[in-house]
Image (cartoon, rainbow, N blue to C red):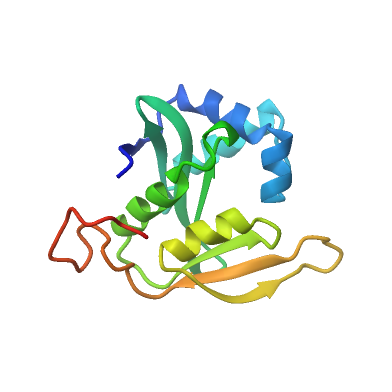
Length: 170
């Protein structure tokens, strides 16, 4: 099992998040535009001031590798994550999302992913989310896959399991 840790966001994390979100390859994969430094700082000030938001820094081996979060948007509890590209392919997003989901009692949980981002769709389905549809804003070239989690994933530590050491997602 990967030894990652979720912790509160610290001021020094924001510089790492800035560099990660400025990566053009990651932007294309997520279908999400990079923010300039001023907009990035304003965005994170707003996030960190919002008591309804859960946001955690993902740390692997003492290194900040990304963040995971949950908020209420459009009347539904949403989840998302961002892992720096240099850390892709190691199962970190799956483990981080599973740990965040285990902290949230509310169901259902919702996620939206660019249709071309198969890796992120796999992360969510490994954590028990089901594809429930697609959505495309008029004039937007990106189709989003809509996913929902109605029940805690089987084997998630501390969520309806007798064996807290069981892996969170398979």
